[in-house]
Image 1 (tube, helix red, strand yellow):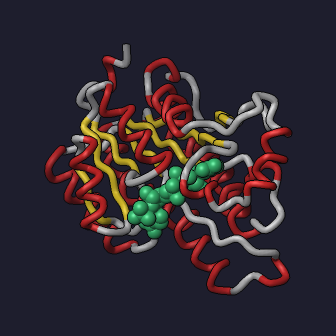
Image 2 (image 1 turned 90 degrees about the vertical axis):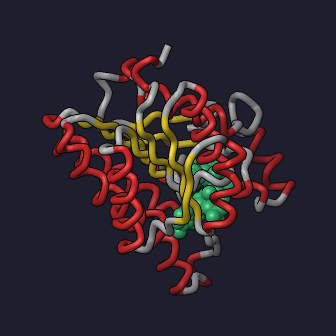
Length: 242
Ligand code: NDP
C-alpha cells in the first residue's frame, strides 16, 4: 500500500510539532523522502533527526527565504512531489480588541505563507507535470468562531485558493486539495481553557478531540493514488462537528 509514495519528495511546512510532525511521521513510514520546516534552525534540525527526515528553518512568511530553501531541495532531489502547507498560527481576540499586528501576522503566516511556498513549488511540479498540494484549512474556516476573525478569515481564504489553483493546475497533472481539521490535540488547542474545551467536546458527535495522526492519515490518502480523481475539494476531519 502507498507504493507510489515510496521515495516521493514531500515538503511539509511547520513539521516540528502537532499535526505537521504527525504528517511527517506518516509519510516517512511509507518510505517518502520528507523535508520539514520550522521557525528555528536548531529546533527543526532536532525534530528532523528524531523523525529520521530532513529539516531546516523556513519562515513561510519570508518570501526570499522560501525561494532559497525550495531551490535547495530541488537542487538535491530534482523535484517536489507533495507539498503540505501546514504551518499556521493563531492570535485570538475579540474583533473589537484585535491589534493590527495580530491581524497582519496571522494573514502573513496562514495565507501569504501558503502563497509563498506554493508559488515557489508549483513551477517545479508543472515542469514534471505531476504533483499534489494539500492545504491545511480548519473547521472554523467554514463555521467561523468567536475570537478568531483573523484566523478563520485566513482558513476560509484557503478554500478559494485551493479551488482556483486546482482549476489552473488540473491539466498539468497536479491535484490541489484542503484538509479541514476540527479540534485536534496539539499545542494550538492546549491554549483553550478546560471549561470551554469540555463544552466543545459535547458538541462533537464522536465526543472527543482528534489526534494529529488522524489528520495525517487524511493527508496521506489525498497524496496517494487512492485520491487520483479528487481535486479542488476539502476533506473534513472533525469527528462530525461540521
Ligand atoms: P502547532 O501550533 O502545534 O504547530 C504549528 C507548526 O507551524 C509548528 O511546526 C511551527 O513551527 C510552525 N510554524 C508556525 N509559524 C511558522 C512560520 N512563520 N513559518 C514556518 N513554520 C511556522 O499547530 P497545529 O499542529 O495544531 O496546527 C497545524 C495546522 O493545522 C495549522 O495550519 C492550523 O491552523 C491547522 N489546524 C489545527 C487545528 C487544531 O485543532 N490543532 C484545527 C484546525 C486546523 P515552530 O515549532 O518553529 O513554531
